[in-house]
Structure formats: structure tokens, C-alpha cells
Image (tube, rainbow, N blue to C red; front, top):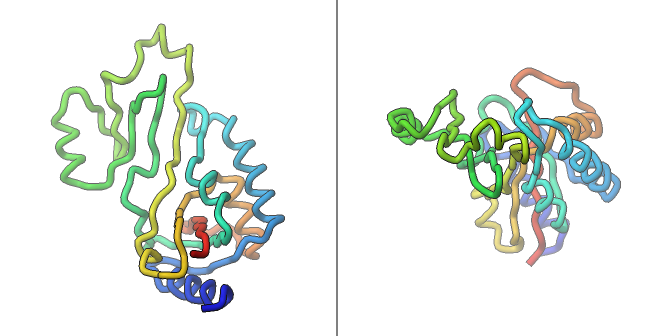
Length: 191
């Protein structure tokens, strides 16, 4: 199969995922711009919680082919965690979407549940120690099961971009921000 045929097959499979709307293949200029935007976003305080580390985007940007896609409210996020809080090299919190697991966490005295977010109390440093190292909000790389069956590609990585990268992607796609719409970036290599 030719590279262009493989890319077209991947684009069709991405568009077939429930909740996916538009796709866009990133060029070298786009990759460089997103790399810079993510670098700037990394140092920013995320939601008042700490500094960011978008490991997913870092992995995606190492791939040969990178495709951005927009999603609506019907899109089902990959199995988590999608956000992990780290401090002093230890996990202090994460998002959990499994309702049964969330209920178990609510019963545990060592865990504080806020919506879909779980904070591990024993891992959180005491106030006098907390100022020494900020919490790092890690966005880990994700798998995309919908593309794992494509035999001509490997090293498939899915990631959620920072707000500045999301805005950039929408602008190059000619889209305006819309309620309930998000963006993801997926990267892969040819076998």
C-alpha cells in the first residue's frame, strides 16, 4: 500500500469514530508551531494547580505523520487517566471515569473525590513542604484502539493539546470555537 493510501485509510477510520468531525494533516510548520506553543504552555500554571507536562503531545510530535481532529460531545475519551498530578515524583491525583472505581474511591478515607478527579491525601505534602515543588499536571500519551488494526502503521499515539495549541489547530482548520467541541492530535509511523 502506498503512503498516501495508508494516510487516506487512517483519515477514513478517524472520521468513522463516533464524535469526530473534521481532520487535518499537520505540516512541518504546524508541528514547529505546536511544539513552541506547548513549550510556552508547559511553564504556565494550569488551573491554579501547577505546571504542565504534556507528555502525550511530546510523543505525538516524534511521529512521522500527525493528524489533528475535532470532536463533539459524542466523542468518548480514551481510557484514562487523561490527567495525572505528580509531586516529588509521586502520583498525588488523577482523573477516573469508571463509575464503580469512583464509588470505591469515595469510600476510602485516604482519597478525596471531586467530580471525576481523585486526590490521594497521603501523597499530598503538608502545607509547609508544598511550596518547595509545584504540582506537575501530566497529560500522558494515550492509545487509539480504532487504529491499532491498521497493519501498515505502528507507534500510534493520541494526545490532547493545550489551549493555545487547540486554538492554533482550529485557526489552521478554519474553525471557530464552539461549545462542546475539542481537538486531539494523533501521530503514527509507517511500518
